[in-house]
Length: 309
Image (tube, rainbow, N blue to C red):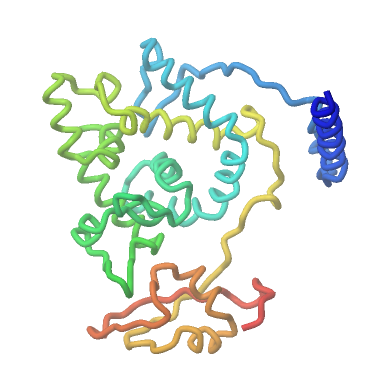
């Protein structure tokens, strides 16, 4: 009985603590932004738009299997609110870098959402060895001209990696016949998708029986496209100033070795940490550059960081 009373006291204290935490939150007070965080939270079934597409290629939502799989991904990504809000924040920062490169190569703009599901727009590291926002494997990176070693790994250079992703996707589209299959091929490999199409005697991604990851792949992409294109519809509330901003930079050409990047950074009135934030492809505190290759190092413009070098 004493244990029960102690437990009730602890529950009461915990409840008071939770209420205190909510009471201390600073809810933004901009016009049309205030929300009642406690009482207005509800979970709803979602109405699936019947005109969803990827790169202009329609998703056959009249197929009950396709409909259910799309419903799953919209629900999972709508109600994973913390992750969803982070995607809005990062998209504001990184989409302006990715979009013009896709356009330059004639790759549909929808492929920026492939980068979202591959890495969450972070320099992710996969157990299989893929790296960077586009999750490129070492062999693929080298095949398409990126440098990958302990000193320099250009998979972490967003501009260069996006160029490689475009080249790969165009080749995949030519081989497989559609942008949807090209996107699936980015996950399972061109040969893997081609083989499964042949084995199962079908021509469309949505008719394929695939493993868990590749089977969900296109649905996840389209779900993120739908949510990130319709924030209000899916309950995401923010102001432009809540989103992350891309810091303007300029490029410094380097065609020699750099013995100490901490000193190098100080020459541009920044510190080593800031240099690495803008150049994650520099993997060590120095640059070997025995071949005298020309690299371009990004330096943030003055006035954006309070940290002293």
